[in-house]
Image (cartoon, rainbow, N blue to C red; front, top):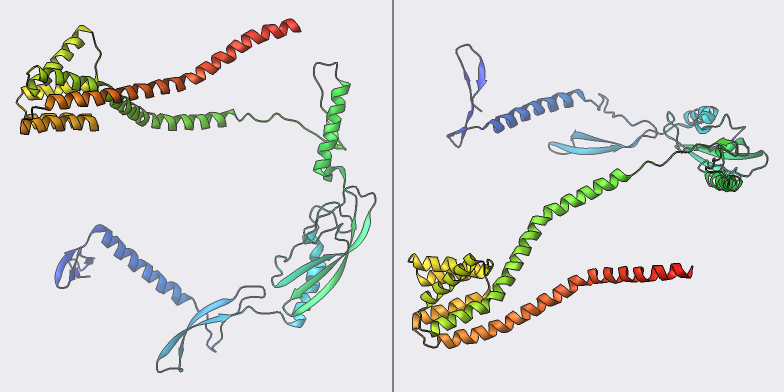
Length: 430
């Protein structure tokens, strides 16, 4: 990167560099990237320069007992012509025998402080113990627990003193391992019966159920039942569950929002389907009228315009309703009167209708316009017959769909009639 010196002897970085001898302008993002790279590089050099793990005597540190392995990157000289880079994996330090014995003795003296939990001491156990595999501050010492009576005390410290009638003396064997050193100790404990506060929750629920049933029986003449306040010496409180109605409302709102988002697309598809069905139903009528007018001696364009005029006249008088096929036919007749070529006008009509039957009709008209085929009227009559059969099939499908839609109202009506007839009859029998 090029630097220049201004009149005040200050240096500034220019926004230009030379690449392959050409002067190239740097963008703002490129300048930021270069600046961040430079700063990070300087920090990396500074941090790495402060980290020294290789001693002057060629020694490197180990992790404390119980720690993880350390991996060091070193540059080694003298084993090759130059230098080599190697990775050194150093295991953590292990306890010496005397050191291990001393730390295990210290741990046993303070062990009860870490495992008693809610108990007052090991001579009066009423609650579960916290038998840990390692103790903070004694890293490198692994602990194993072997209760004398596993059914009374598990190796995780859980007590099974529900239903115990009297205190039981037992022993927990503690095995400490520090490196290669291993020692075991006998830890005497006394387990007492569980008090009311530590009773089995399932048992308490059963007692509560019995108490509520008894209260219901005793207070059967009262308008309200008073629930028990105490079970097995343990105070019991009651509260009503919070209504989750807002959650249902939120889900309903989200569901409704999704449906509202989908509704425009569904409406659009429905309109397209209804329009295609309407085009299909009117196709046979349009073809029949074209065949009649052409048979009477009219040209195709004049017959087309006459059909459109008759539709507009009926629409104005209220005799008919707007129909998609005739609306497209009227649009085409206006194009013909404005001088648009017949081929283009008919092709646009077929494209707007977008049904194979209308494409076939336009193909017949275009063939007649090019070749002057005198058999156009017969072809149109044949097409009208086929279109009428197709219209009957469409009408039959509409009838079947209507019958399916009427099934639910009919079933509801049937159930209503049955209830209306059956309920009074049953009441008279009672």
